[in-house]
Image 1 (cartoon, helix red, strand yellow):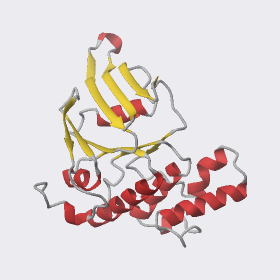
Image 2 (cartoon, rainbow, N blue to C red):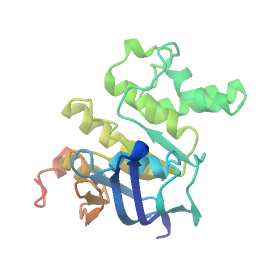
Image 3 (cartoon, one colour):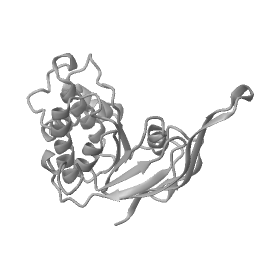
Image 4 (cartoon, rainbow, N blue to C red):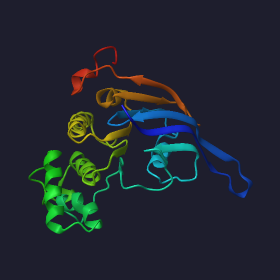
Length: 241
């Protein structure tokens, strides 16, 4: 399987102004992510997980080492990369359909095609019939589905997800995890997923990268030897409880 993302000796320090010492966030991160792989990253708070994701997204250009996508070093945002955050990022003044279609509108896609593609995405994530609802009328899980659909409608090759289900209850997280695996099976994106939940990582991932405390580096990469699709029943099986 071809490599989608390569990390070679990636380090990052913050601060250092006014003669203050710099704070190391990442140190010598080395990792390879295959095309179409679902990789979860877990580690203690403050270990640099989000910083690593932001580097891949091109939002932190001044880092040491190399992050390469398609053989090209990442130094700025790229349209082939989508990102979903933990916080609610829906626009409260736009309906579900308008939220999902936003990225296409910014690319000047004709209105009828925007609507058709947005309806397809809403159907894919199980929100057909809610296209006219505003975020205030939707649950937290529904709003996160909209955020995922808004990222996927731009057809990114890589989807970065920073604790996207972290603010949701356990049952909703499991349901959305199952839907996310179903969507990935249909669309084939490479996904890097940050979570604090080992159970969630086991449910979703092909592999799990474990990071050390700050400065973060890859301590171990674990294969998840469970067939897909997976539901909540896999979480307590095969010694992963």
